[in-house]
Length: 116
Image (cartoon, rainbow, N blue to C red; front, side, top):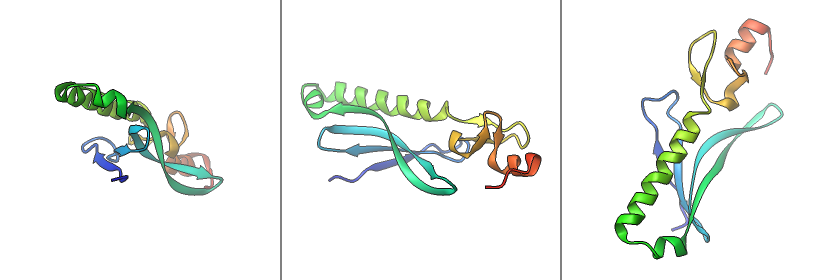
């Protein structure tokens, strides 16, 4: 069962996807984000948190649930903090889709003539 489980943050911006992925080391928590190689985008998985199998096995079921929920919420909040509102269109945009701190790619093209 080495397959990630995805959760979409509905009702927030573009609905970022958060994952929990069982690995050899433990349960990995992270999110999907576009990575750029020059002008070519490709999907990527960004790891934010990890809880080891030994740690999980040493806890009661209630503690396991609490830790999993805490790490899931920590990962969601980390991803949400990367979004900013574009100064021109007002959309909340992830860091990988912004020209600068306050301008999305689409508005950078429209307002500044940036070609992607």
